Length: 245
Image (tube, rainbow, N blue to C red; front, side, top):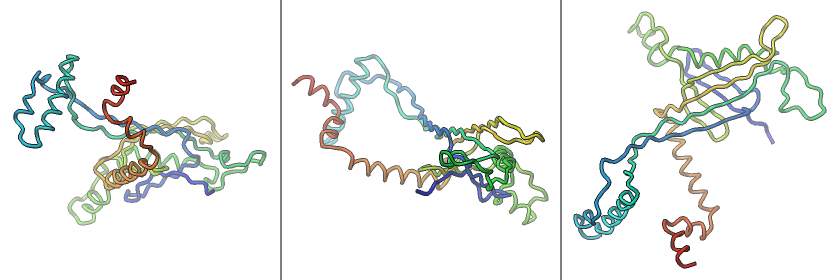
């Protein structure tokens, strides 16, 4: 099996940024939050929505009235969806100028990592670049070349595309923590532990593609369910079983 790795990249940045994980991350956590607000009232002890509806709409009106009874019974206002918050990814990984222990067979002598040339400073520089303003080729560089502006200083950090496993999203890096745990005799870093936080930038094509991919995977999950799973998922199924058991 081929060993795969992940990337943090922005090919459109000036200069292009490509960070390849030397070792697969030791930790990747994902967090998604959604905001809700309380409704203005509890509802009424009557089938007012049912009366206001006509035809088949009375069925849905009755369902809405029955749902309102729940808030009244427990004296708690219902919640309305407000807006979602960006997905947050936290990663922990290491960089080492000495070896690649995660792909070395047990008992095999560890050799120097030729890919990194014994230096992790270039990789650290790429990571730091995601936290510092850089030139946007569309708004900054293009304006400079067309003469719209004589000088376009960088104003914001570049986007950071996270590509690892089934995650392929445009993000912004909000936190970067580099801890050098071993130095060379000349005090250049030999090993570093890195922790960083990324927030999804939803104004991107990658988010739309991710939604499509998620829906496809949800469809595949149906093949892992049985008829019993569908029955137990029906609202009120547990109460019916409790009554007739």
